[in-house]
Length: 250
Image 1 (cartoon, rainbow, N blue to C red):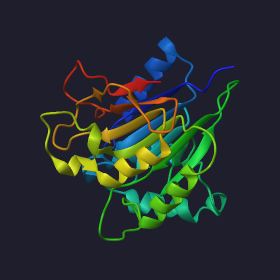
Image 2: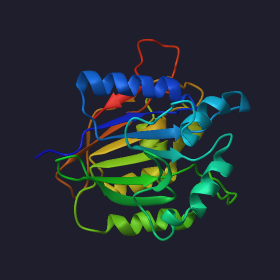
Image 3: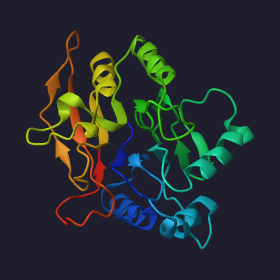
């Protein structure tokens, strides 16, 4: 038996038509895949994109999400409304690290956590996540809290290897030479990656202001661990560089 097969993408910015068209194509040519992880801003940047986005949330006009999709970029236009509704859903009450259901096949990974993603007939994949961005101002959506960080640190003490780590910001050590925008990195993520030691780290905004860039660094060794960690900065959905794929398989 093998682990679940997954797809990943960077900032979606509400472009669900483009995203799911590419996902369906990948599923047809190289699938089946068990899940899609969206790291980076999931919600639209402006109200102009809301109709397309809400068609999928509400299941209108035949718009359907083709496979289980997990988001951690809980910010953007309509995020407070959509996520508030999901939070009040009776099915989402309690402590849920495997995602709050927003609609069919769409799940919000809120705060921080670790869960086992089960495949169709495959072994589980251990996934750790930190949702939202770092901020000095406590907000209900779009940022993570110190409690979220502490909870993830506690999970790092549990036995077993984390297969995947997904975040919205890059670890500071993963920023490649030549890019100096410090807002693209997060020192907290750096500390957590060091403690959790995942096999793979996926981040959406490797360097701010250069969206559309895909980056994979050389695997690096971990202290007190036999496995290595690979880091990938994922490109934005619908980026204009046709040479940069915005859906990545793993």
